[in-house]
Length: 95
Figure 1 (cartoon, helix red, strand yellow):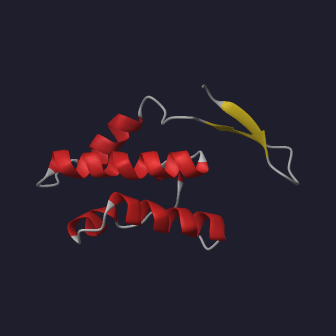
Figure 2: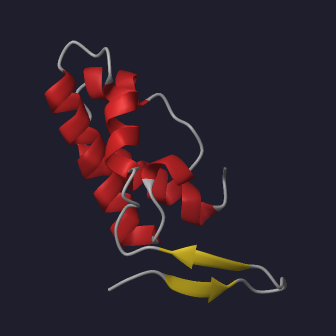
């Protein structure tokens, strides 16, 4: 399934949502994970967070407000915990 257009209420703007991350998302995740001592695990964790958010909201990890992802990874939070918190923030309108 490819991108689909979604009109937002009370505006004439149309946003495109994707059923999977854009082709450059892997590069963006690798760029963000670069320099971490456990690059492979951190990049895989970021991809998992991105996938969970994308499935729930139709937008990716980097489309949401910034959070300190490295700290969350180092603190041992699971990708599901982080994605759940970010999704809750996004749908709760608290960002």
